[in-house]
Image (tube, rainbow, N blue to C red; front, top):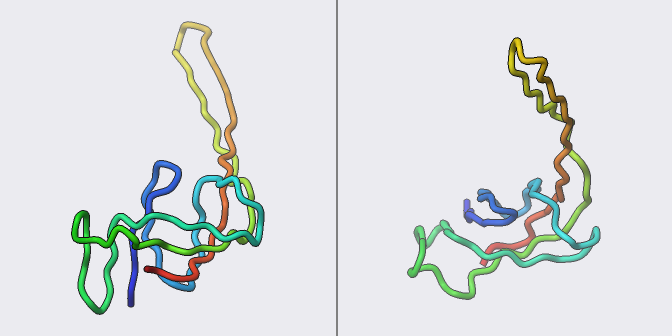
Length: 102
């Protein structure tokens, strides 16, 4: 089972071939392909990290769709000071299907 660690949107994700993942929004339309850099890769030939990782190790993925996550409520309050703030937030995401590793 080969897998890799990628970084996109300021976060790191563990990906495997054929799986789908949700990452922070990417400016690509559905059906387009995306290439991502690998921080680490592991497979039958062992684990490669950092300088031992080939400079050409790329992860090929296809954009499946875009969406927005569930709403979270940000609520701030200071008791006895008549201070309350309520704010909602919905994070946008892009669903990627991993086509190949390496």
